[in-house]
Image 1 (tube, rainbow over the protein chains, first blue to last red):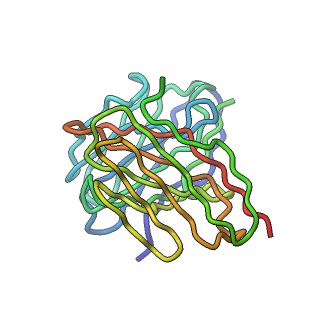
Image 2: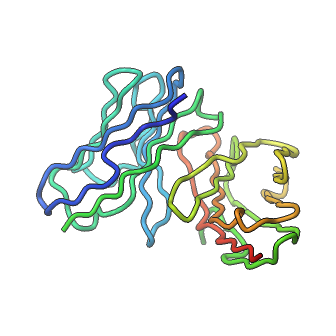
Length: 113
Length: 109
């Protein structure tokens, strides 16, 4: 199995630009998670999907962030407009269910200048 | 006070030593996750447990629900075990997760 695939691996862009992060979960996994990791705040759960439906987006920092899962094999996390404080590593993970072990992608390192 | 506390923050050991990393939490949980983050940044799920003990190779994880405490043990530690170990809890009756700040383990040859 290819594991969870995230793209891009690195993104550097200027503030105000739209950023789109992509994730392909492991086939057959029903749960998908988006996380953000920074030095200051550590790991944080942003949003959790179950069977393509957003279940909990209470971790999404503000309206500039949005996430979609149009089908079982693809999810996006979008930031518009981006700000320097959004700079972080964003991880996507998937699992068979919420209480099953999660498989993480390699992350997207985002730098907003 | 953080809802999930890990100790120690940093740990240096000699190869072969027995390692214990602790995680205490103050909320009701449905499960607890131990994660390993390698120096390159990749994250691997080591264990997810809601009671008792689990073992995988040289790694052992235990949880005491009544005491709201979990431990991760590494037997016969090796330099390749050097990583940050993160404890995460799934909040009971909720879809949220809380993370510990991580324990940075360095195992010297």
